Image (cartoon, rainbow, N blue to C red):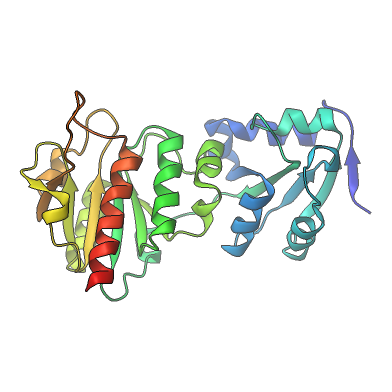
Length: 266
């Protein structure tokens, strides 16, 4: 029979709710995943939750499947009252599940380029929502991997999990410094395509069919000179209005789908 917690002052609830802050995630080596769909993707990606807090009263659908899969993976199931769950939740419209998972280490050597790889490089992306959206687009295009360089937000941020819709756990992913990532790509003969408004070539004119890493930069400053100076090609997205660039996740999506189109045509 599962444990039931009804007190908002319960030490386990206080400990879990603190994981919304980065300093506690880094110190504990743990992270939060809210949402049944996100948790199911995490399980499919091999994640092993330590504990799943759930509240059937707040769920718009039956939780039997996600709870059974979580328990099978070794998670402890803890039922909580609506008031307790609201303390744990970080969404505006909670769906009744919050899990505590070990924070994964994501290394370059864990990536497998395969034949004709397509990578996405995200340098110094600041907003968790943009980072999550990048992962959703990478998942949609079945990229070989995403390399997050010099991030200013951590991948275990609950808002990255939310905006990625759980693809954080299924897309091949690595964190590295820019010099490490560039050296890794060079050693595998993967060309670097840098997206920048200053480029003369429109992105649809670039050849994206071979082994390629598409690099996009921070929301305000774009790619650093470290990437621009190493780029095999620099491309731009035509901008006909008053601003000179798109949101980083939108720009990455356009570039990835162009690469996908070219590869399917080939």
